[in-house]
Image (cartoon, rainbow, N blue to C red):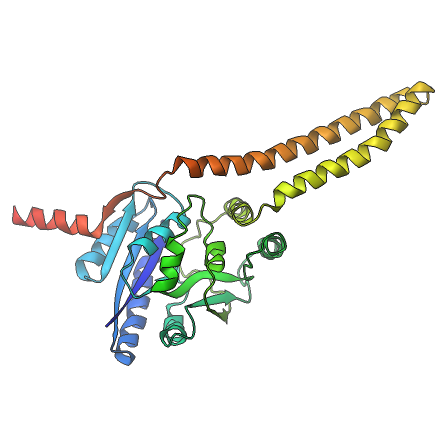
Length: 325
């Protein structure tokens, strides 16, 4: 028998979880009929949700023994949720997908067919359209992929998703990368292995709202750039050189103008402009170095990536203990 672990990070997904469970069980039951060697487990990760997400996990665990869950002590972010799922998955194959049905479970049979014969170690989807997204958000998303691929030696495919069907070998390789500051899209690419990209059109959420704001995605993009590239450090040096080159003639013109009384006010203004330009670039460069130093500081602390507040096993244990009393 081959066990497939379906890892589902969740944050405030009470509206869509029942629909997701119905859809994923329908697809996996169909797969079992075609592939009798398969068994499934569903590992839900509650990333500090503030709604009824944890309560729904308990209900699902009561009616389906295949359902497992880990509930964090607070919100640690999706990256921590995926890491916790991969670390605790027991399967020979591991699937990572969202609960909002924007990662259609209907792709799972085709994904398994690509992976089962050993031709590929991972099957994943690649979004070829961004229907439903604002033009501004789509523009910045495309720009991110162009920039990060120019700056990093690790290629991140434009539109690649976290929705992946992976072999145990690839999952174990990912878990070897246990850094605190995680950017899974880069990690998936960095570990290598043979990956099959499946194009698909964007699917909108059937219920609820996304927890990803534009600012949240922007910060996530910065994390990605800094996690897999040191190019910003080199840019700081380049900007400093450009600043010095520009400042020299401006300073000379301002100085000569002041000596020969050529519009003293203009000269002072020019000098002030040079000072502000140099100061801004210095602060910019220090900021870049500070961000890298801050990430190094967090890594040196060696804090856990997540903390567990409750699991399906602790919940079932408490329930059994209460029934015995």
